Amino acid sequence: MHSQELFQLSQYLQEALHREQMLEQKLAKLQCLLATTQEASESSWQALIDEDRLLSRLEVMGNQLQSYSKNQTEDGMRKELVSLQEDKHHYEITAKESLRRVLQEKIEVARKLSEVEVRLTYLFNPPTFRTLLKHGKPNVETMDTSSAMLMHCFNEFARHQKSLH
Image 1 (cartoon, rainbow, N blue to C red):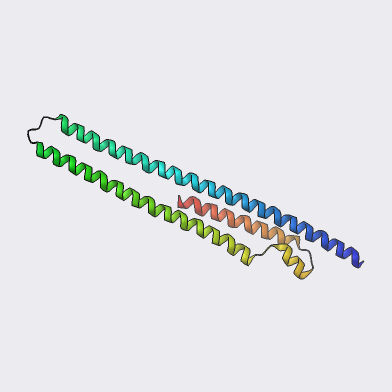
Image 2: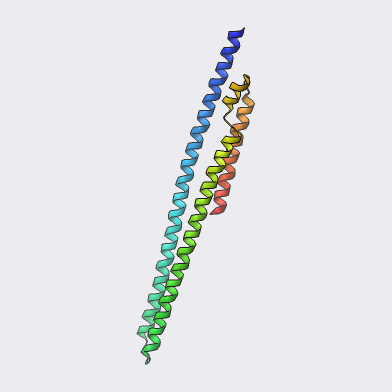
């Protein structure tokens, strides 16, 4: 009877190890997907900034053309207007660049936070097969609870990431 219990315990441990490996693979895939999503978000944000810069520059050039096409007698007023429009364009670009840097920092902080959350999850909820080894009793319900908790943490993290964007 003793060898049968050892065999059954061995089977439970192998099953738990397999489940843990599957969870680790899923987590790795989810982390990869998250990194890809962050890169896509960052590139779309950069495209939006670039588009806005171009539109702003077009507006400045249009205003310059309009100013030059008018037959004004005071050339100094025209030059002053062009100078002011260029200054406005420069300030807009600087403000948008500052905003982009702040948002990149926010994204980086969110990424680091997610890494810390994953590490804390593993720290406070170590893989179940280690618990089985320690106690010598199979507990499939605990494994299911751990996997459900991991999925819940990931879903919360995904929701948090969406709210940042």
